[in-house]
Amino acid sequence: MRKILTLAFSAFAVSALAQLTLPDLSPSGSIIQNVGYVNLEIHYGRPAARGRKIFGELVPFGEVWRTGGGASTKIQFDKPVTMGGKSIPAGTYSMVTIPNQTQWTILINANTKKIFGAQQDPYEVATEVVRFDVPAQSTEYFYESFTIDLDIMNNDVELYMRWENTQVHFPIYTNNNVQALHNIETHLAAHPTDSDNLAYAAYYLGMNHQEPQRLLGYVEQALQIKEDGWYYELKIQLLADAGRLDEARKTYQIALNYLRRTKPEGWQDRERQLKSIVD
Image 1: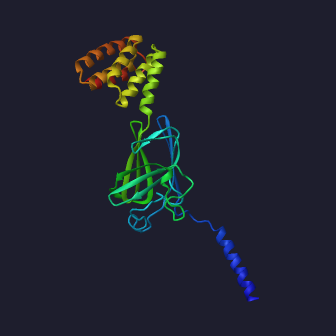
Image 2: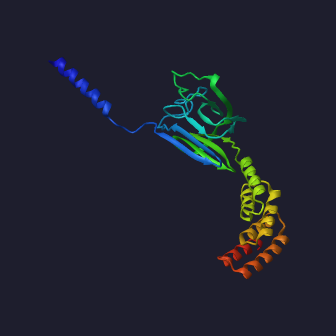
């Protein structure tokens, strides 16, 4: 009878354990980011330090690490990008690492089914797409949980990985700027009298520090088609940025006459904005 009761209790304990719900020790993290024409996603587990020494102990130096908790970290992009000096086709990849004290090796692998870094899944060089080294740096801030961040710079991406007091980062280059310039040239060739997009093209390229020799030409073309307070503001700003202050002030006077003559909506605010550029 005692044996029957023991078995019944054991069955109850297993059943209760199966139903127990607790917080995930390595909760999943995701980044879904549009970068120009590229849609980029990263999915990874976020283990916490919990008082443990991470790099060199929990994560051994010189060994493949899944770069997070649970499954290997996945990175996905819907258009080709360049990492480690190599163009990588659109798709989903495992992103694993080999941490060391002074540098990490980044491994991008086409096999997304295996958990590289786990004992049962030894790393496969045959499906490796690219590997490259990046320096390991110290951080003043202590990162309790493993963290991946993206910083968008001029339509490209800088990817940061941080945990404990260590960080590594590397660029992901897109083709956004080349594609944007192609789109501008194609549109303006088909619509040469589209003054708004001539001005917008100059503004966009100027903000991204591209094609400086084209910018003033685009704005002057727009002004030849029609006068507009924003077009004048762009031209004055471009001239001032180029150090051509006499020309900027001369254009300011022309713009001032236009605004006071036509009095478009918000013209007084525009006048003050123009004055602040040439003062």
